[in-house]
Length: 132
Image (cartoon, rainbow, N blue to C red; front, side, top):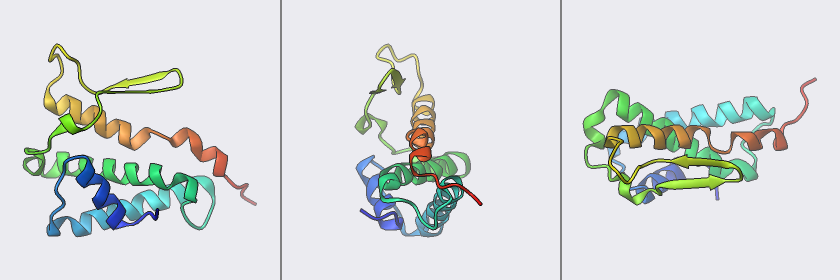
């Protein structure tokens, strides 16, 4: 799998967001932003293969965060029910929705975006090269 706009668009589609033609510039920006963030963090010339899935989710998070901030109406039909409700990774658990309805849809979306932006960053040191 490669880290590019098409893979991010595909991931967004799997999450329930229909990518529009007008999203192209924003998607490209998010992909390049995440690519540069990872490259700077691990001191490599490109995103390592082992971080591609994390990079794709981070770019999705950046894109959805921008949409939520600047064009929230574009997310009005975004169905968060296709996303998982809880993820457990080792001793860490992230819950996106509570069965009693105590979280609003916007709160669940914000939690999901935060997860996309932060999940997997603990794997960056595995790929880090020393700076000279």
